[in-house]
Image 1 (cartoon, rainbow, N blue to C red):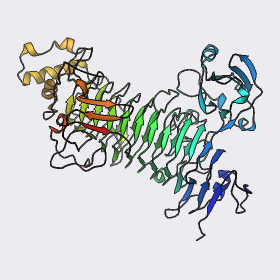
Image 2: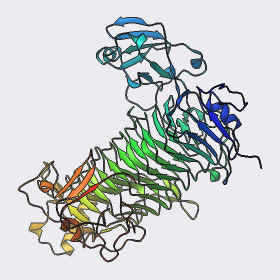
Image 3: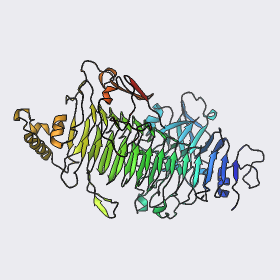
Image 4: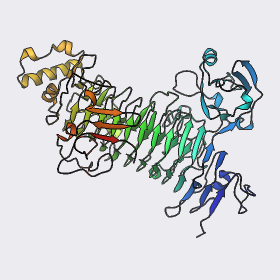
Length: 630
């Protein structure tokens, strides 16, 4: 077996060239062409404007490693410095002609982003490292510093420079020109490690319709960093940012890729470890992978993804299809303008655990189109701006346990069927989607705006065997301005599969069965307009949450629009969760939940007294839990 080598890359090294002469390489791609199993490509500090394109696989015992030298900053960019002859327009606005050999074969300023609001292109412009925003029209450009426009032919850029820049010739202007930054030349490479690199500035597209057999409708999953349908990659301690589309792809890419190569056998794709990275400021999503089976996403930070405001689907800080046996654990999701975690179309034996999701635009955790099993446990989802904490549709077999759902804009947990699609079953074949065999147990719900839980009316076929119990429900001390009370639940109509009248009839029957006097029953016709249930009615109608306490806090004092003067508080910025007195949570005892033996911090649960929510270990009195990734 050949001896493993270390191939050094150092732009400033003595005698550096791209010849294999024992001296440092100037480019990473030159070393990548030579790297074989067991080799390490060691990259020294610098900015490398290139596509790194490995052509060889490693082996289980001898992976190929691409890593930054210790304590050195290595940045690989999909952009080039642009130095046109500037023509002044007015004020800080200048115009330049797009040129350069890097735009001859691929000009991203002629390619429109799909599914965004306004006229946006996949090209990006940076000035002194600052990402400039594309203006939709001339008037917007003129009134918006740090913005740009391209002409209809993609031949000229007009830039309204940041106000601090007096002369554009004194600024470093970069434009994105590459669709990949780190991506193999060949699909299906295996056993590759990528460590400690900063990968940024990629002109890639939203992965829209990547599953289509019609090539014209297919934009593949193509990240700035791409495993290109490979398997057993390790990606760790990297920063992946400022892609116009995806930061990283780790699945089969789609029916077509960007380079007309056939796909490997999909059964060979996956088994990746994506650990301790920062994935931020990407135009669409952070990570996507279709068919990335048994892949683990652990200990990463995801922030400010989907800055281009792409519309669904395919927008998630993490978005997986066919996520069989996958694990998403211990990640931090904050300020993303999309879903934090989205598992779509088969998630058998997947687990989403110990994640923190704060201030994301869409749901913190979204499970769609599957039959399970799937475990969602020990997560915190707080302050979701436009959605539920945990949302499950056309999906069954999901267990939601030991989570904290705090002040989300919709329900804490929201479950329903929405379509009549079919999905692959573990036993083979396809079965209709539904919303069945769900479990919502041992969670803490605090002040979610629409209410605690919404489930679809059970019809015995597509929707049945859904159970909720041993949850702790805490509401704000002041009713929301809708005037609907402090503790709210809902039986939904499954996106119209059930008539609202049927839900009202089911409630009437339940109240009559429990001998509720007619004068204490609602006007059912009016109730259908705001079909909320009190905890008592929820119990009578569904049999759920008979062991779930719902303490009513004092109505005299409240802060932050949440709960009684610090009784429970959640800080976004630090962040931390605190309770004024441990008894708010520790007064309740839950049954053991198999599979959730450890809490948010990875500490084992006290099997003699299991508490609801993701925190198991309290001290007497005031508790403040600082939240950070493992």
